[in-house]
Image 1: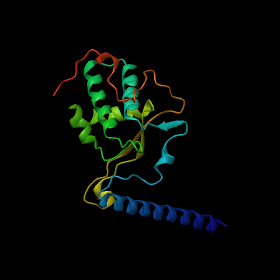
Image 2 (image 1 turned 90 degrees about the horizontal axis):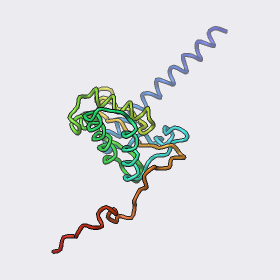
Image 3 (image 1 turned 90 degrees about the vertical axis):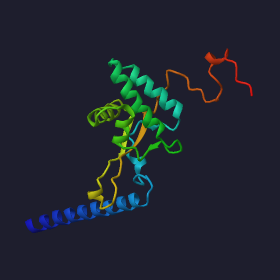
Length: 184
């Protein structure tokens, strides 16, 4: 009887190892292809009750709301807002995915250290703004020439109603009505 249980455990462990190897080879193929396509089942990684933001103006408003709700020093507010805006500007608005953006790029955007970027990403996940769809992976792990950057989506609760209206008309804001356009 004991042998049967050990055999079953061994088969399960072997299946997990094969699955990991298959996933690693598939990820390496995606990295070698030069595209930043995330795992094909990425939508299943968005938690229930969350909706992926697919509108840049709404995403920027949500970032501003979340940052305004925090009692941060001016330098932290400025740096973290810059990094969050870079995440928003790096999104593909057809899918809502942020792919190919590295921590080094976020570091350069705000002029901060990697630990600050890591803290900002952790905070964004904690407040529900950011969901990591696929973790980054080193080139050594994948067996490729380059690393794979993490993939993210910006999310809001399914029942989210923005406190600021989003203008999608592309008209100038009312505050600019008195401005005179430049003539040719």
